[in-house]
Length: 271
Image 1 (cartoon, rainbow, N blue to C red):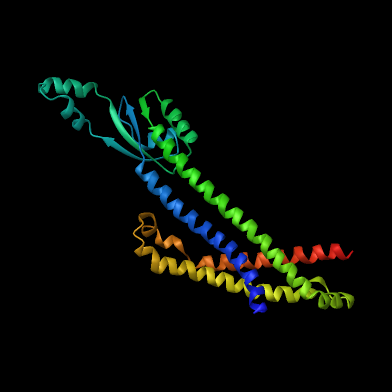
Image 2 (cartoon, rainbow, N blue to C red):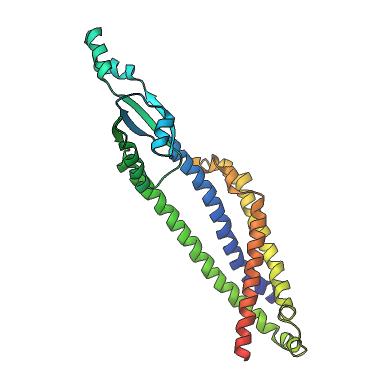
C-alpha cells in the first residue's frame, strides 16, 4: 500500500503537468482555428474614387487577403426609387466604389489602426471603415481569455513541479544509504542516482500514456457528442499522434531535471 501511495504521489503531480502541456497544445490549435473563423468573418469597408484591384490594395498593406466589391447597382436601386433613369445614371456616374477587404490573420487592434493608416495614404481612397469599436471589444475579450488560461496552466504546472521535487526527496532519503555507499566506492553521479531515474522513468511513461489516452478518448467519444460548436468543428485538434511523443519527452525531461536538482541539493547539504 505504501509502495502504491509513494508512486501515486509522484504520478499525480506529473500527470497534472502533462495535462497542462497537452491542454496548452489543444488550446493553441483550437484558438488558431477560432482565430481563422474570426478573421474570415471580419471585413473592413473601403470607399474609393476609382476602381481598384486586390494587388493594388496589397501594395498598400500586405495584410490584405481578399477583396469583394459591393455592387453599385444595388446601391442605386435603393437610393434612386422614384427617380428617372437619367437621374439614376447621373448618380451612378458620381457614386464612388465600395469594397469589403478581408485580412490575412486576426491582428492586434494597433495593427488594425496601422492598416487603416496605410490605406488612407492612397489619394484614390476616400474613406476606410474598420468598425474598430466592435473589433476591439471581441479582440480584448478573446485575448483576456487566452491570457487567463495560460496563467492558470503555468501556475498549476509550477505547483505540481514542487510536489514532484518533494516526492523525489522522499525517494532520495529512502535510498540514502545505498547512494552513499556507491559514492564511497567512487560511483559517478548518474550511477548513484540510477534507482531514482528508474523509478521516476516508469512513472513518467505511465503518466504520459494515461494523459494521451484521456485526450484520445475525449476526441473519439465525447467531442462529437458534446454539441459545442467550437469543439465539434475542431475535434481533430483535441489530440494528435505526435502529442504522445511531446508528452513522453516532457515527462522524461521533468524526471531528469528533478533528479538532478534533488541529488545536487543533497550534495550541497553533505558538504
